[in-house]
Image 1 (cartoon, rainbow, N blue to C red):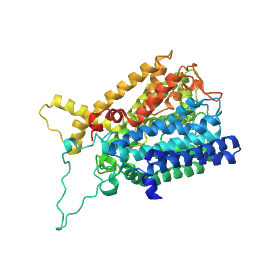
Image 2: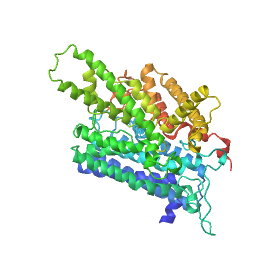
Image 3: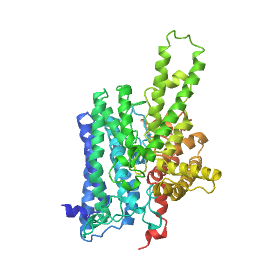
Image 4: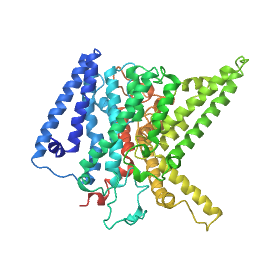
Length: 543
């Protein structure tokens, strides 16, 4: 059986896994009284399994080894073909939505963007479970593909720490005996020998290493939220949305109303793995330092979250001073102190949430806005989403290591203005980040800016306000779909996704052409521009 599966194309295996996943919502819909939805998922899963079996049998006669370069094409195929299969039961369960809108919803979930065309209170719970499962599996696929597909090709952020011109950055010590010791290569090393040189085996090994930790953290967060008071279904979808940074929620507004601030503190801790690959297996070559406290991505995230939380608190505090002049004063001031602390926590939680492109909002976020009388700081939240989380994690955006490399390069250039003949220090890794790393990070940043401009232009073809087009484009390219719902936008009403649609949230009222552009932007933001451009390189196709 194992030998049979090894000769089946990876995309067919993933399609079979999708079919098995459909049995989960089918069982949940059956026990919750949605027999019609249960049949849709069950029959769709059986149909896909039959076709996968037929294709698998057809490929056994002439098996062909997969080249490493084809894995990037397979990754493109995952985001291009699998959403069509994922949308089958969704479109059948919502007959008035149409297959195109169902496909768009699945692209948003699979890329961990988390944008939705539907109102949470009008969509059946089994469909919410399916969206959360697709987003969770999308996050798992990103963690696996980062080290098994993108790392050997030196794209997806791995180019920042790659040795330029194949020179040796570290010198190995001589063996202690006459028998030379073979160095133990890490998972993301393209020279990983023996059977793992095959891309399918490399993917399998990465999945076996990342899967238990990913599922264990999800289970731990689910149990923790249950103990803090969240309903079972809300706690499950919230745990999946946190670990995958998809931000998919089955409720309107903040999903942590029942568990309150203690639940948000627990979610806050589980968002930290999205800041660095150091917390996941297979990212050894991305470690710029040996000590966790000196990790550049974590230090950059700590500074950004602290700075943004302080700015948001001062913004609400200054706004509350103007509001309090028109209200009777509190003799003890306890009410204002409580509101100030709540506003501080709301800014801290929201800053980390949008930095990891999850898009959760604190339960105190709305109260802080009422306290100050100010709207949501859209530019700050969009800036955090653009910076993004850690490289080779489920977060989107430019990524923290690239921002760090550009910052260190700028610091070094300012030092050279004052001391032109100074010599930089910090070691080999620091010099590489300031030189080749900053150069590659600048290239990616310019490509990212050009992508935003191009998507804004395509979205603005239809009569959509410029501010709305900009925020939607940033939300799609950074895979931070809830960003559009957190910022007041002027909705469009040129399209619909059925009776359950929510055009006031900025997505479902868009015309089909605009939705298609934004769906492509989600895929581009997830795979990253450099990886897509690698497909157009002649060296990529050279034998």
